[in-house]
Amino acid sequence: MKNWAFALTTVAVISAWALPTQAQQQSPVMIDSNLEQQVIDWRRHIHANPELSNREYETAKMVANHLRELGLEVKTDIAHTGVVGLLKGNGDGPTVALRADMDALPVTEKTDVPFKSTVKSTYRGKEVGVMHACGHDTHVAMLMGAAEKLASMRDELNGNVLFIFQPAEEGAPEGEEGGAELMLEQGLFSDIFPGYKPERVFGIHVWAGFPSGHIGYRKGPLMASSDKFEITVKGKQTHGSRPWAGVDPIVTSAQIINSAQTIISRQTDITKAPAVLSFGIVEGGVRNNIIPDDVTLIGTIRNFDMDIRADIHDRLTHTAKTVAEANGAEADVEIDLGYPVTVNNPELIEEMLPITREIAGADNVKEVPLVTGAEDFSYYALEVPGMFVFLGVTPEDRDMASEPSNHSPYFYADEEALKTGVNLYVNWTLESL
Image (cartoon, rainbow, N blue to C red; front, side, top):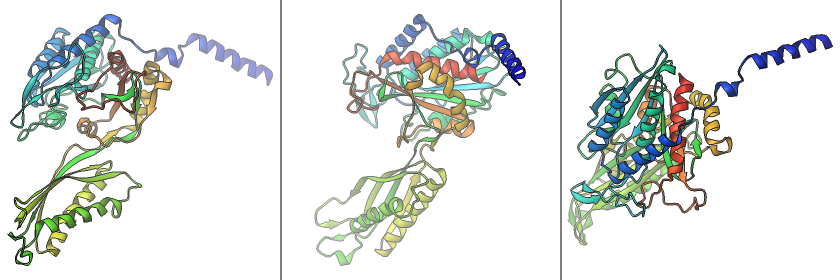
């Protein structure tokens, strides 16, 4: 028994010397300081020159020129201003997709950074300031950096990389289409580069109030679906002194609002997935002594389960119509489907966690709670397995609880975190190929 055990130990020692360890096989590739500075420079240029959704003309031109200089096959004008680059490796392996969004927000910047945006544009007929208040400038710069690093390693890639620079994540202008959904409709994963449909897709979103360089992930649902509803309650106008002579849409609307609150609190099994139904606009009437003909109610629905999402839509429609009917009124209900639930593939997350921890530090990679914000990365993850994570961009010496959030005019992104994002894109790709 002892001799047999000794023989096994000897074989184990020899094997350990003869073969690389798991850690050695997965040793991460890191960008150098020159590329890191280039990423920061790109970010600052984009930040100082922001463009609204479906209007990312100069940003798209800058991205396309960079990808062409790297020798990639480039397609432009997808979903208006989208840019897609294909890097073909030296092998017949799979294709991996990496995505960044390019659009800014109608927000007037109030930070004091030297590359502060002073750009103005028109949004819904009004002049507005424009700012990368959600960090999409960092997303573009990080993916440009990843493209440069991976292009320099093309002979080592047993497969291909699809770089997606997407417009209009924040939503297309009124009356237009855009974003991830339109890119897919126009052949992003099929006709644009036939035969190169990715087998997986990765995305990163910078996040305020989360320590710089830290990574937040979650298996399964991460971000909510986002749907807009509009209910028009139709009554019969009459003088306020004679309510019996008409049908009051204001009282009816109040009852609809109250009854709709029970859809989540009493009719939805929230042990399966949280949900939110909120009214944000109530419009009706022009004078204190006139009961109007109609009232408009507008709100949002957020949810983390696609089946429950559909059920909430049905219940809201039923509630509005039956309450209105009970009051002698009518209710027209329109529900505009927004972004689906952003769902991370659990197996893909599990596969990428070891290299993610090596790059960011094991203690800096944390599972995060559900986020009721929405992201149109969700459309890609419905097509192929997806992984979407948050990258912290708030310096650790700041108060995380009071740090201005994404979409704030005071939003601040620590550029020290950008190299982490680039390194993640590069190494997720290398692990996948």
